[in-house]
Length: 121
Image (tube, rainbow, N blue to C red; front, side, top):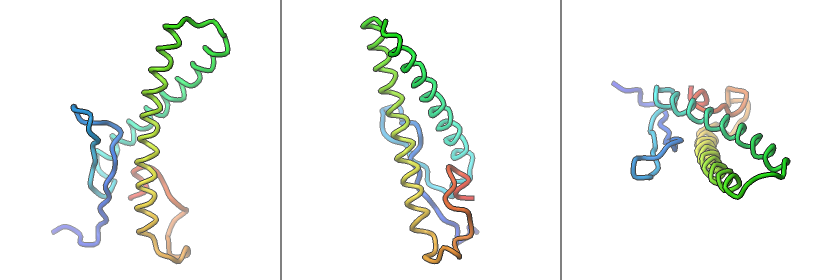
C-alpha cells in the first residue's frame, strides 16, 4: 500500500516530446527519471557555459563571417531555450517546496532549498 503522506510533485523535464510538446514527470523527485533529468540539465548548463565562452572569444576577435555569426546565433538561441526551461522547471519546484514547508523556519528541517532531485529526498 502506498504511503499516504508521500508528496507528489510535477516536474517539467528538460526535453520535449517528438512533436515538440513539453514533458512532465509526476513523482516524489527521487526516481530514475528524475536523476536522468538532473544529468541532462547539468549537461545542458555545461554546454551553455562552453558556448558562452566560445561566443565571447569569437566576438572579441571581430573577424567572423556572416555564416559563423548566423551559426552562433542559432546555437545561442537553442542553448538559451534549454537554460530557460531549466530555470522554469526549478522555479516551479522551489515554489512547490515553499508551499509545502512549515511557516516556522525552525521546523523546516534543513539548510534551505536543494536542487534538483535531492530537494525531494
